[in-house]
Length: 344
Ligand SMILES: C[S@@+](CC[C@H](N)C(=O)[O-])C[C@H]1O[C@@H](n2cnc3c(N)ncnc32)[C@H](O)[C@@H]1O
Image (cartoon, rainbow, N blue to C red; front, top):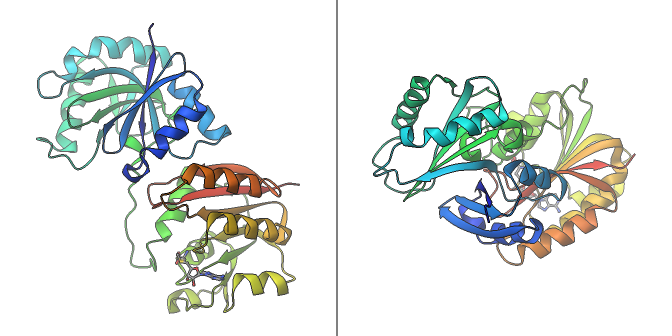
């Protein structure tokens, strides 16, 4: 029986829970095999990368970060892309009549590769150009991905819109800036790139940040144009306190929720709490949101009974919200980021 293969990227720490999640939700899955530190191949009777992307949005599947349909797998020590290109040509044409493709190179894990990502990109791009393709780094509708695992190179072709991330292997790279006050900022920054919650909404309105100290998320929200209330018994960085549209409420989230009469357009929550407690707290907080307001919460699952905790949290959150997006982002560690939309 001919099967379909999808190459996925997942966090190294989340294997094998990511495998369990796929086997649970992809009904025709035959096997999920790890091929590199952060890469796995799902083999299924009919399911394609596009189908997995749809499941990731609907169910949602939280662990896959990047997807592509596998076209070929070859040994990079002895074979080259030029011998694979005969498989690649029809695969590209299946998605796309034009000759323009983005080329994405991804080295899976900390293996001692004998080449750099840059050299691999240049060599593969030349092979594609020699065969008549116009090759871009990013921005084309279709991406040709090559994932170098310790033993093989896996070549994939997929529409970027069905790949979950436009970054090679979902490896979003964000750089530290002098204004940054916490590493946690990367999580919110990455989320806004992956799922622009408030695109086109102007003015942004009011935001509430639970567990705000030292103020990274508050800073990002304020910069985005939200008038932001930061709730935390701890100190905010003085640079954040000085921002004109930031107010610090030095109290616990529970006390704030009990006493406030304010209403918000966005609530974010990065408090260190068990996922079920965080979820209940977000449901209680839904009354502070304007209709169709959004909320962002991290669910800190740790590494035990992860799928059970996710199921329980989603069931709790479902009392007040639609789950619009849920994913373990590259900047999440043993946690996932969830975007919620309050029922009308
Ligand atoms: C991971 S840090 C948040 C980092 C923040 N998002 C940033 O970007 O700078 C978690 C914060 O949650 C706060 N926290 C924990 N429990 C809380 C509660 N019940 N009420 C308010 N804040 C709480 C802690 O004081 C801590 O500052």
